Length: 354
Image 1: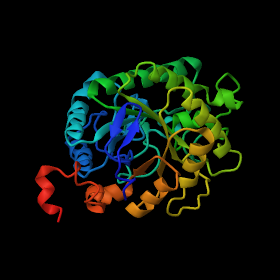
Image 2 (image 1 turned 135 degrees about the vertical axis):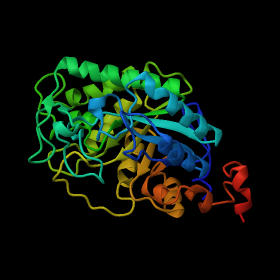
Image 3 (image 1 turned 60 degrees about the vertical axis):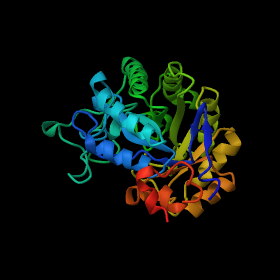
């Protein structure tokens, strides 16, 4: 596992290895505030040896939360706790990252253990926003179609959130344009039926994401990297697909995006996915080679040998892990003590290496 646990240069940042804690919703915030849960959850994965530790999707506005219990970064008061978290992650030798997001029509849903579907207005839910007034599922309330003023506000909100992230000490910022959330909704013709400059052609459907990217990139210093997460395909006929993802990734590369984090699906309730280990890796590979941009692979990557093989075969540059790191926050340490011997083991845990 020499390559998996080798360092990687991302813009001007040196990640200590190529294992990334993928953004994973925790549904443990009130009014968007990070809590001690986030400190311990994210901090333990930094102690566990990961190279880059991402927060869950942090909403750029209260209406952009997936659930009322989502993390947020839409006001300055959110910064202090996030700064405590980034400081701890950095102390452990890992790099802190944040994913900025707006859920669009998939907002205002219950936390998984509290129910299913949309939260009614009388229970603290809210009217959702989208490019077009098309509900994600039948029987759900249709979102409100955004006007150009609302679109401009979203661009400003992403940029303001990125500025707060800088103040909080994050070194990597990822824009979430996947999994059927707002920016993905603009990309896909299944959810975007607009007839103005933000709908119709590929150029128009990608306009909002590129405007967000340019606005955020313009405020980032040289020591902070920019990523974008995309869904390479909708897994649905007539939707967003790999060919468009490759074309988009070329544009992202030309607009100061340092790496494309390649996932898939989430836009269409009728999607049909052949789920199996590494099922999304071919998308990362195609984008890496055909768009000429570094990529991250994610999706049922569960062991070090599998991750190492993906890297050695040139299919991706970073490995994003999610559920495996929920099961075992110390996966990097326990996977290869020899390669990690020099730096990742905290002094407090060295006696457990043998």
